[in-house]
Length: 210
Image (tube, rainbow, N blue to C red; front, side, top):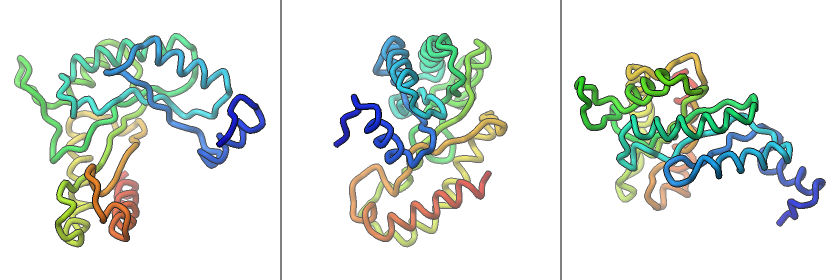
């Protein structure tokens, strides 16, 4: 335990936690308020934490939130944080893992792409979107033989990233895979050699895909 009220120990805590690298900080959008997000950032900035950016996201696609509704909430929080005049990047939306293409209910024009409609709202309202973030937990069946599942990592991750590019996620901003793991469900492969192989292959594949 570290007493973070003591500046010296606070520095030790931060350096050990992040290995002296800047931190990407999440703030709540769906289940929190803009006021709390601003208060969190004011605290971290006042304490001089080394920060890289602010992730606005809580797996909105997994909560079955329409892209326009989530984009409106995102915009409200992003504008409040932008008022702090901080140089930190703002992005998100921390998409939950999905298969092939991230779809939602059809809009009036017949568009079912969640990210495409989210981006249209954000761009149309001049809201900061400096980076894109998503999660990758591909295997639901933790009782199945891991070997054939592990062989699918490059194909499945590649398909997801390709579909996001087609949906309009720009290639000229950073893409962050802010969470990844063998499965969202607990199982032996999570904590054994299969999990280690998954982590190594996933990170390598993600980087090799650009």
